[in-house]
Image (cartoon, rainbow, N blue to C red; front, side, top):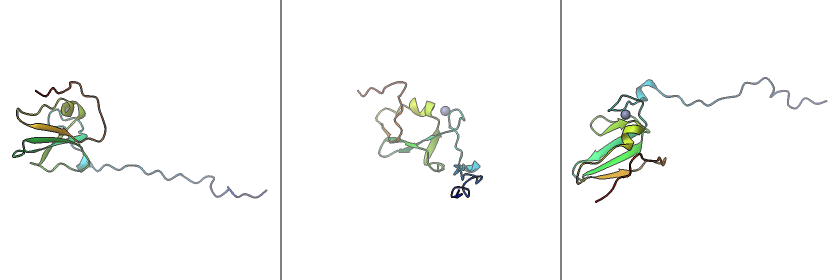
Length: 98
Ligand SMILES: [Zn+2]
């Protein structure tokens, strides 16, 4: 009986684990929890953006936030909040635009 599959047996599977470097772990500026969202802003354009946190936050350019606090984010009067997160998450409170 040919042992065609013998070379596959006993071989460890290669797992491609996602490696998160310690320096890339951002913490929520509000509560210190691991952050998955970054809030950036543009003063002159009076615009806030919420994005998925995919790269280290540049100090002064944005703030890391956890989902809880990003979901509760309310823009200042006269500002526009733009949610550009890819993952659609139910918000705890819907924003009412006057
Ligand atoms: Zn938080």
